[in-house]
Length: 423
Ligand code: AMP
Ligand code: GLY
Image (cartoon, rainbow, N blue to C red; front, side):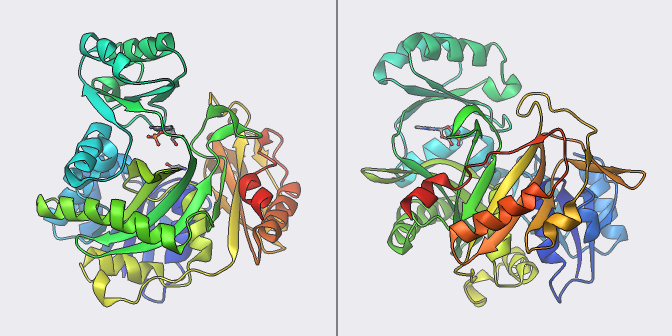
């Protein structure tokens, strides 16, 4: 098969690495890619958001599957346009991608299908939203409805903070994403990530993970895209996975199918494990980043074969995906300044040495200039390792980190702490 992979992060490097291992692969192309992805794919230039250009590239290069890594092109309808032209795609159509594209859409779907989630209300103006605050306790959660690169959520501890967040969102703090908002009850518990493969009708579990969203040690400081992750998440044991499938994921997939907007691709459920049971916090319509990196290292099956089966609606015909019993951890090396404005251009050395003892370095915000590897984004490297226990995986990853020479880089030294404390 000829495959086109869209995206440029550590998530896409991990996907490229696994797709390249498939005996079914003829040639892998990637756009915009990065130097890590370039080890497995021919990098091609397709303008971001150019659906016509993507279709033309696929026609010219006999592409048989397009794998769309990030959410924005999915919410923008790229999968619909490719499918209309006859191409197989891994990723949902625009209507089903509303699960990530609109928080209110997902809350309404949960209400319709009886899926456990925080009590909520939707608003299109501050005048309507402000008086409704008294219906919620404190803390209260205020969310911009649309895509806001993971930044559109405010957990307000006081009424004043909640009012300021509402005013800010309607004043354009998150651009168009904040033209509508959701006010939500605050849920207490432990967060965990659950993944499922879906081909419209069939749904199969595809692993569990936990990530660390805050930039600082001990889960403090600003929110980020994720500073590290591990898989599996033992807190999502078999009984809990069954319950999440039954109460949350299957009713979602069934509701979308019944509406005539079936879901196809990977479905990523962000869960809160509360005293009353698992509740849905949010859906993502793509793999998590960095959760994808740890899942890909545990996956024991041919990723490309699974993706092709989903694109063809044949998921019920393939054996359920298998994952190694091992634990995998990934530690993000970010550039100074992240999650604000990161320092760019710092030279990175030592990747080979760091990989010598079994760790794998996925590249995210990197670029190559005159043979040197330079930092070019916020999250720069994902140092990933596997072990019989989480502690062994952790030790391998941190030993590898010591060998990386990246003066502007920083990382958290406590990735996995919650699970390590438990074990
Ligand atoms: P989201 O983008 O919806 O995943 O929200 C980002 C983060 O905000 C989540 O990972 C949670 O840590 C937190 N969060 C979102 N909604 C709630 C809620 N209803 N109760 C408690 N925490 C929440
Ligand atoms: N790491 C969280 C996400 O990808 O949304």
